[in-house]
Image (cartoon, rainbow, N blue to C red; front, side, top):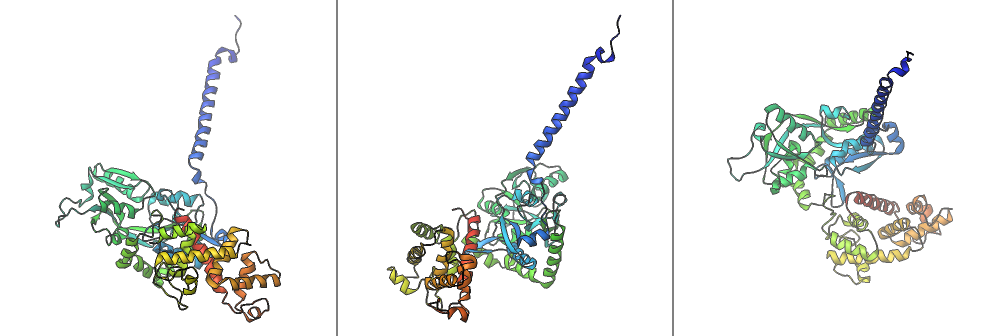
Length: 480
């Protein structure tokens, strides 16, 4: 009998292990690609303090709420916003707010480079500390159960200990520290809690409001957030503690050690100076002001509102082909939406219309909001015609805004000066803007090209820039 070589005796023994190995390798490769696809936000870019300084801007992740970041009468405000603005000034860069629409996404947004830091309070937890670095604590807080009062002064029927949450349904964001705390309570007491995860677009304040309205029974909040909400939500009870004190801080990427070092040093100095305490008092403890902000409800991007006059502004903007948010930004710059304000020069109302301008457009009762806005829109329409020679729409807006502030004559003077000194009369930045500013200097306002003479040109330049900066903010916050 002819013997077979080992390679021919048991071909299956040789082929099957190889096939199995190939399948394992293929499965591993597929898993890697799938993980890469599902975790794209784990690709962490390098953008530390040096890169921030070179770019000239600090990108701060903030979610809108009535304490940390909101718009009141057109202006950005809030505890975290003011602190972030101060920190940006400390770094010598400008602040760029990156709105967080989904709080469940804020850490991934930070890690994939959409922002440089998360600048509102986050509870420092071990889980979070594995993926981001936290600043020195700005404060500390305990978690409390937010529930609706029973109507009985004795508090009968209210949950008074974590153990009593057994069988209760509690609404919280899935990626929040509150969610993890409820899981820990279940493990500790051997109870079952119906945890309902809500979308990250809902803030803690939103959920507190839903408890007050009776839409949900329970939620969890940090005590420093829940306490000021009592001033507007009279039906909530927040006296049941669910945790001990926990530190609160801002978050940066783990590959931004210089930024964290600069942030920590600045926070320590600010806390020693008392500045952080005074800002904290402004937003957390002055209940009347908080109540006023929240009651007017013009802080919320989700509400889609800027002022009480949005309907009038939308209608007027439509007649002149403007974005209503741009017109709102102009009105804020003029009057902060105060229809009764009168300037030193006699300009009246929301759009600060001079009586002569109002009369020219057949409007005389300038303190009446609809009439005032109608007159202002008509004047803007005349300025559109005045600057029709500027073909680029974005550039033309700058000429119009400066003219609204100081009059088209001074802007025409700046154009003529630009021509005389070799600049472009149809460009704004570094051209007409430059010479409008220079019209405050004798060598230029006395120039033969400047027919109208002196003008404090820095004012319309800042005015134009301020309106457009605020307009960009509105476009981030308010739907068109």
